[in-house]
Length: 393
Image 1 (cartoon, rainbow, N blue to C red):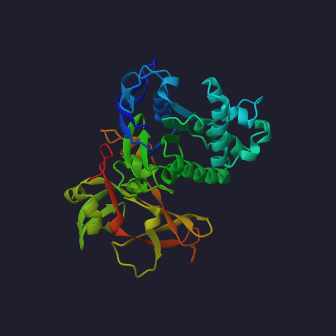
Image 2: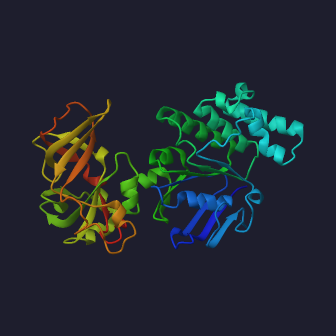
Image 3: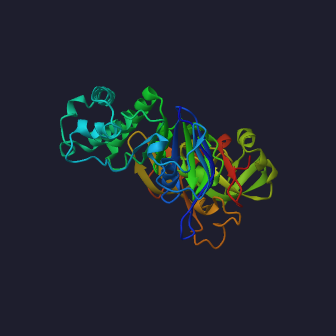
């Protein structure tokens, strides 16, 4: 068991700030759902309302069909793993892990069996006699997770549990958490600001911005079919290039023009964004993925590539990021998301030109200041409304 549902949940603080606005979200039994978004988007507040650590202003949260708005954290049968390990320094690893069972007055034999079982799952059996000060960051996080596991809760709540670890250890612990959840099949709600973490862990990912749920979907769908311009600009590393553009009739059919540049619109893009074909003569927001670019030669046909001066090259080993200066006008994902006035167009204080980033193979590697042609897979164009930022589906 462990199905969690948000029904029109709102969190409004005493000063009038709305941290979570009409959140509707269902997490299935045994599912791993990640809440992701920038700082202040409402993701941690949402998790804390499930835990009973924040009061709900309106709406309902249910666990297995029970409305838990008025339940204490203990009555909700959940277990939390925090950003800080919150281990008792005067207790051994074994005592820390057993603490919630001791508070529940669990019989000694049952308590020892649960702790040993969790320690084996987390591969920390050899650490049971140590104190937190004798452990590395990754080991402390395992102990914190073990303390949650021994309770066999209905729901795991994890609030940025890896943010205090170094980059290499975060990658390792991501794998540990994913493996652990597959073994235990405990419903998990996980909060992070790291979109790579979200995409690699979640069965489904919920993207939030300014207290509003932007999209809930499996990771592949978020990447391939973003529903809002904010999701498009947030999911992906490097993020999608977003600029103001217009759709017009070109020599080979519909094309999208941005500044002095233009790309043909293949049928594949129209199939994904059918409303784009109705926007001839209208302004749109164009999105292009960096990984859909490749270096082209001078013979590349017009409408299939863009040209510009290389502003910066970042060599990453197996690939390179090339930043190309253009006269296109950038679109701000933050300003457009959920803003019906289409803020971010004129008078937003943004520069009038933008750099397109392309992720390419590093051979040959262009030089800074060089004029290059970048071919683009024109069946992978993305189109959004400049008024509100919704996808033109």
